[in-house]
Image (cartoon, rainbow, N blue to C red; front, side):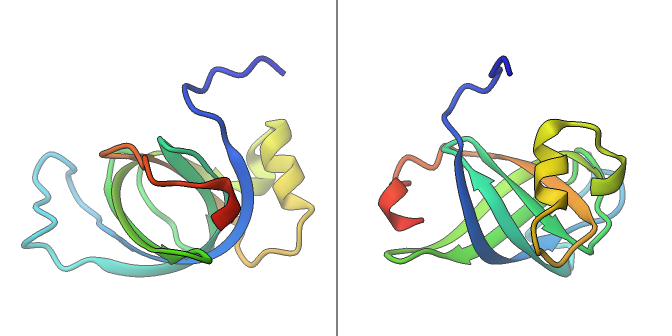
Length: 125
């Protein structure tokens, strides 16, 4: 598989809480808008973003704040949803691999971070 990503991805299995928003992404102020709460499992992460599964239905181009803990740190990362959909409808090799795992969630959410996660260490995962 030809890797198009800028940053190396690391597989993981991390429970996460997230805040997401609905509406026009151009008009949302995350400091003023009340978010919708979601839960999911991060299945892979890089310095630039993450891929998680959840039962939440989110919109592309919407802001998201993902909160999770690793062995060493707690994170609260702001980003933008770049892809989403039902796992069963995603023909990619990656999504099909995740579909076979015992995870709670029928949809995937791909997030690009607003700022690089420079402090990420593989040993934390």
